[in-house]
Image (cartoon, rainbow, N blue to C red; front, side):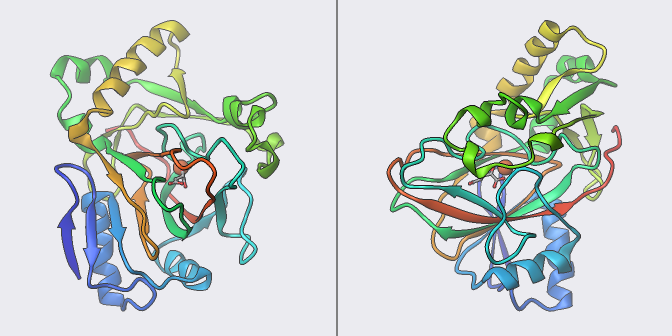
Length: 276
Ligand SMILES: O=C(O)CCC(=O)C(=O)O
Ligand SMILES: [Fe+2]
């Protein structure tokens, strides 16, 4: 397999590899590359739903999203669907998947199924690189903090998504909940320090005033969203993206109104996150 960095700090393209047919040695190599980059892009893959499942199960343990509709092909595959006449998309703001769970997701494997003629990119950010580049005084200010992550404001009663035309696709209103995690985690595989807060799910710092929390969170978010830590991936038929939810953010562009877009997502279970 060939590994080519995608941009300065954001992702790598893995080529000369088919995810459906990789052997055990290639899988081991891929694990190491995944730990190094935290964000992998694949082109020209032949990965029908059963092969998507098989690759995910070889890599880890599947965890099912509590809110998204699942695909016809399998209850383990979540649909990231936007209909032609739908305005709101799933994941349109910076976030990382499942940070509201006590045991957050390791990663998500997203496969393009139906794409708009143009637009519909996914943007990513590298939270390990962003942490490393933080000014020392900012690192000091977040040392030892924990943050509360939730999904109630999105998927609970009157949650943001419930008030949009996405609502009919969503279930799980009674499955909302919170979790707290360290603000700086030690990545379980790479050993790197990572900033683990995200605009979609992080509510506030534990034992802090809400308004004070927002101020510092916004400062952190401004730092991460800079071009040197982010990239944008243009989907083509056969594209697959595999991101590590412990050290990346992502958001889906919503710039293809009037066209349909359908992706299949499988999410892998992670482990409890430890402070760095
Ligand atoms: O549709 C996309 O590009 C990404 C949506 C998203 O947030 C996800 O699949 O987790
Ligand atoms: Fe997402």
